[in-house]
Every structure is written in C-alpha cells, then in structure tokens.
Image (cartoon, rainbow, N blue to C red; front, side, top):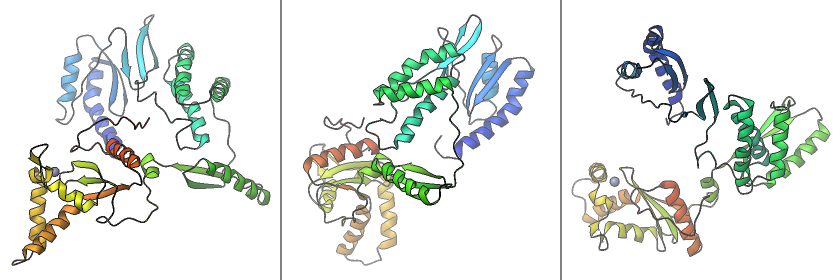
Length: 358
Ligand SMILES: [Zn+2]
C-alpha cells in the first residue's frame, strides 16, 4: 500500500463499507460470517449469493474492486494461513509463500545483533502457533520451521534450545524495568562485545541502573556505500558506478573507466550498435523540462557557448555517482549490485554470473 498512513486510511474506508453494505448483507442472511484484516476478508456466505454480494460491494464505490477466491481441493489461503475442512470443522495452519517467507535474516552473514536474530526464533514460533487452529498442526509445522532456520545458517543447538524453551512456556521471560535505552547503529558484530563491557563498568558504579541497547540495523546499501569518504568531484573522477535518473523517473545504471563527463557525452551520441539515439532524445518528459529550464536560465541574445553550458548543466544534474571503485572486479560487482537494487528501466537486465545477493 506504500505510505505509512495508507493502512489507516484503508481501515477507515473499509470500515465505512462494512457499516453500510456488509451490515445489510448480514441482516439479510446472505453473509453468515465476516472477518477482516486491513482489506483482506474472509467470509462464509449463503450458497448462490456470491454474485449478489460481490456486486453490492463493488458498486458501493468506484475505487474498490474486490475479487474472490474459493475453496479449491479443500484449501483456501488467507493471510498467512491455509484454511481447510476436517470432520465438518474449519481448521487452519501456517502458510508460507515459497521464497519470500522462507528466506530470513541469515544467522552467519547478516549484519544484525545476535540477540535480534535469536529472538526471531521465538517470534516465528509465536507466529506459527497463532496460525494453527490446534496444537497437533503447530507441532507438525515445527520441522518445517526448523528447516527454514537451518537453511538460513542458524546453529541447530540454538534452534533446539529455543524450540524447547518455547514449548515449555511460550511467554517471553519477564524483563527488568529499563532505566535508559541507548539507540546505536549496528555496523559490526564487535559492537555487542564492547557494549556488554561498557554495561559491566556502569553496573559497578550504579548497580540499579538497567540500560538497554537498542540496535538500529542498516540496510546493505547503507553499508555498501562508502559515504564516510568525502565526495569526489562529479566530473573529474574515474572508475565509477553512476546512475542517470531521467526527468521521467526511468533510470540507467552504468559503469565507466573514464570520467563521468566523458561517459555522459557518449550517452548523448547516436548508438551505432542499437541504431538509435539514447533515451533523452526520445523522452518527451525530458525535452519538455529542458525547454522550461532553458526558458528560465537563458537570457535573450546569449552566445552559443553559454547556451551549451546551460544545457550541459541541466543534463549533468541527472547523473549521480553511486560508487567509486578501486579495481575492475569491484566495479563489476558494484554495477551488478546497483542494477539489482535500482532495477533500472533503461538498462538491459542481464544476470551477472559472479554476483549473488543471497
Ligand atoms: Zn525519460
């Protein structure tokens, strides 16, 4: 849904729908049961009333378009559950989308506090327990869950220990009351060691002070980019990964051994290989913006050199250096990385053989 306020608005919007349309359908006996999470609904309805209900919902406002899914081979997926009928009763068990829900933070490779990684076992167990309608189904899910943790680098000993703890008591142990919380960027696994040491020293002086460390995990991009270095002049540095972001919001990620200015000029020329001009000559949004920019920055009777300078300035303002690299292999790796995260529309998307994110 995008923005952070979107779920709230969706909730209010669907709430209005429920008060006006759904309530009537329930009163008429067409809907027998109606449950909802955000804009996902699960309904038990009277036989033969599906089209009437769907029409009533979809004609309430032109901006909503509900679709429906039915039980198929005694199975229906709703949120993170698979619902099925057994002995005349509805049961549900954990459903995981292959890929997305089975790749979690890698225990060995992710830059994340151990404490958070380990506590995610508890979270996953809780999630599984609440996604199963009875204990047998939950117990049946445990080997699957264990396999996911093992595949993501978790040591078997820790998994077994946490599983056993959870089965004894699913509640988290009580925590002492926190006096202070320090929020720190987690950039290295050594941080935990140093902070434990610091905490020990504090405790010697103030035994009753309970300090908690909250770690802010960084995205791979934040760590990969070496922002702590002073920025290079855009036009003079070599061996770069750069991004051209067009006014139309399509982008191109490329690498160059020469300076960005030389590379940028190549982008303006006719491509013999593709037998076409590059994007900016064909992009109406870019051309329109350029004309407006020229109107604002070029006074009448300006020299050709001045006009060219203004156009170049506009053109170069679309380029951004993503990374400066030392070696050719770094350059290739970084290019693949930035192509992967930017998914540039103006690049040909080729899978890089030597580079894997996961
Ligand atoms: Zn464009």
